[in-house]
Length: 262
Image (tube, rainbow, N blue to C red; front, side, top):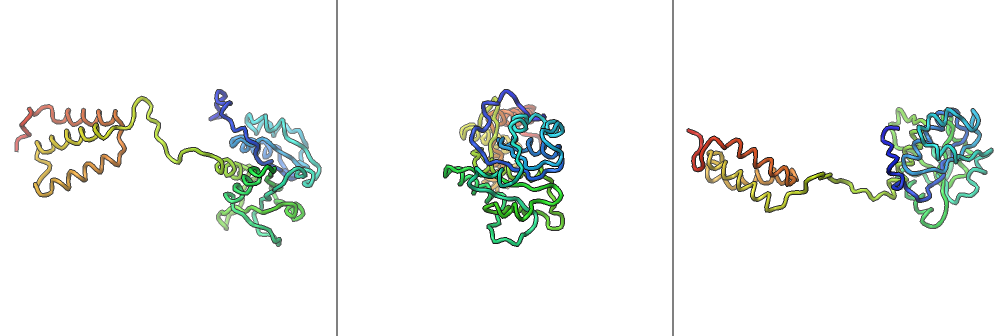
């Protein structure tokens, strides 16, 4: 259970997500890995239709790697129609085109439609077929839309858990507000402009002393290039202090007002 932090249970998603309906899954291990994928992204409503190896299944529990809340709460159904009876909007997954007039959605758009159904007060579901053959047309006919993953057309094979993981992730992402980028500053903070300018003046003063900023007519552009380079680095206060220490260490052997011999 690498990555599992039992101390953060209070941070787990509490919103109701779509049901995941596995139609005629063949292996208990595949059910378990699908359950694990669901819980990774906060989904817990697992429904199983006619599992080949029966239910409950200890191999499924072992493969779930601790996603017991999903395994223990899984519902067993005789038909797909029974499994989706209480749902308002169902997206069926398929790996190949079918002769049906239905919306064909990408994973991202499917997640948006599922979110819209929940926002309107409805309940939704994701329909997955057997590992070897996929969903039958009669099952697809019960859905509101089909979902096809854009993959390498020469190798479009996704196993059951991969497909469940992909759609669970898209559902989670559609409602996630995590910043696209962030920096963990730990014991420091971003450097202020005053600190940056102090470093620039320190560095440029030493570069002048050592004759680096030559010829004089190129000095302004050289300084701008140096400053832009360090600005792009988004330095922290600790990093500025470190850089000033580096400059001081490299120039300490020469008295102020003097540079190295020509």
